Length: 410
Image 1: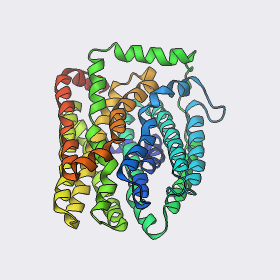
Image 2: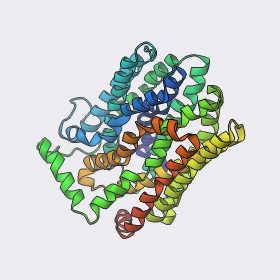
Image 3: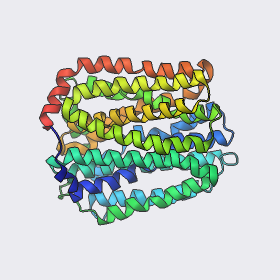
Image 4: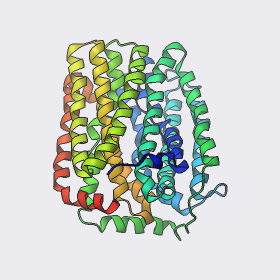
């Protein structure tokens, strides 16, 4: 079942690109870009791994998601008001982070990076609820694809382009420019339409309990949650260490940045669009299985690069394959999460599922540097590939539940 061209002309769908860009902008600034900054500042692999824990708010969004359903910012309405507040705060904190030097004030870097992750995760909660509330049924597939595309482009700009900017100017310029770029989201939130008003939950306890009861009442709920938790663990573990790995092979920051900007953007766009097309054509079960297996196999390209050493063709291949397969997996998983959410509780349930999808990978990411130091880069990337096998086994077990969720959304 394809998506008509006309739906992409909808103003609501086009807004998703800008909101996706705003949501994706801060992510790598506390992830691989932060790892690269720390690595070029002389931090050890163990320190870099430990600092990856600042990204834990992305996996813990469920803790405060009910508060964003229960309470309303007076300006702009329940969804847009919170979006604008978090985007403005991100602008300020990123500008403050740009003034820091890890060699002189690693504690300040850690606190501000943690603040960025918290504010960014909060923006994601509200943005996900907003697009779920705003988009019409026939617009959701197109809106999700456009949102993910904007999200990934922003990530590549704060990933690949950030390294080029840092190489020619400074890391201060990277974080200052990123803070100013949050104006895109602020203007969008101000101008965007507010979804149809609904009465907020009567209490915080109601905002927590009712969505959980609704989710866990469905057949196979625990197995579904475990599958979502494991699906992208290997990819998350590998991504924490990709930048330090490439820098250890003596690739220059500009070399890595150019490959990420050109090959990475092209591969991600292709992967996202292909993921949306595959999900529509093959259904959720087969697209999740195919994308998951390809995502795991993609990590082997870094293992080959580790065995070969500095090799520009293999660098381009590894980055291209990685981003292509990641785009496929993200598109398939996002479609699955949307299919699992009841419309009445979409904000809380989406936060639950997104938190589950990142929690284990982020926790294990804190020791990824220690693992890479002990087993070496080739075995490290092979290990991240093998993590896909438990998720694939759970996926096969959940085949009927996934097909039912897929059919219910069509």
